[in-house]
Amino acid sequence: MHFKVVFRIAKALQEQGLAVLRFNFRGVGRSEGAHDDGNGEQEDARAALSELERRFPGLPLVLGGFSVGSVVGLRVAARAP
Image (cartoon, rainbow, N blue to C red; front, top):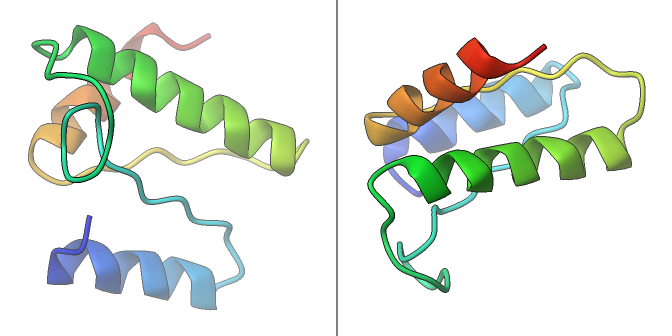
């Protein structure tokens, strides 16, 4: 979450007026829970998207990630309506 590439991309998106949420998956950093082989992590990503949708209704959502986050993001996006 604090990796330079992730931080810079988030900052650039914010500067373009987008709402940005960076978060750790369960069991990473100070997050509660334990690693769940990508299944629970997909739930984490969907929960984050739901929160953004609640806070910013009607705005388009963009999901991105770095390393494992990109794999989880693609899995979530592939199953999204």
